[in-house]
Picture 1 (cartoon, rainbow, N blue to C red):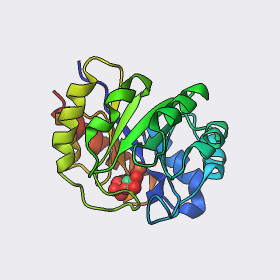
Picture 2: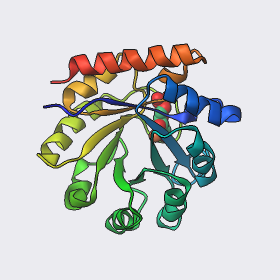
Picture 3: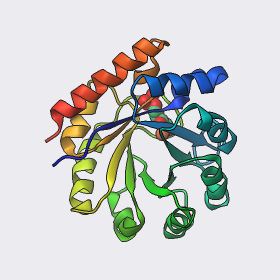
Length: 225
Ligand SMILES: O=C(CO)[C@H](O)[C@H](O)COP(=O)(O)O
Ligand SMILES: [Fe+2]
């Protein structure tokens, strides 16, 4: 049976002056997870926010906080995110220097672990760490900015990762340019966690967030095998 579809709005597309209210709004609008994009201006050409924001939003939701770290080096900061309230911590395979060590550190902190692959990175880099991974994040844009166009090469990559994972208990997340139109393409290929920033936060009200989340979910569920 297909894994349940989960919608994870990225707060990168929210109103930064009202993080708490925005998180509460997407929670009440029916999202499953909260996706937090951390950018360092070094691994990616943009700066967003750090563990203090995770700590600040934690009281506004009891939903799962999914933390996407686009920072390098990453190991120094894992404990800060765990203490701040992240439930899952994803590191980039390209961030280095030692992917296996980073994943071991996340597990030792008692958190779920994720590994992310940029569009230009081959999926074979995760082959020897799959025993330490709860989620594989496949980027469908180059990381660093919201509102970019979905890169369709992720569809075939998703199918390959599904094969690699086999019957292991690992989620596949897609991040970047996910909309009502692109969500079915990746859901059909086997992805089950869909990050959406611009497509969820458009409209600016809890009613529009609820409608956006419901429409993406419905389109993805219909496409699942
Ligand atoms: O990791 C990211 C960018 O690096 C974001 O999660 C992603 O871009 C979501 O935004 P959108 O849905 O607007 O593309
Ligand atoms: Fe992200």
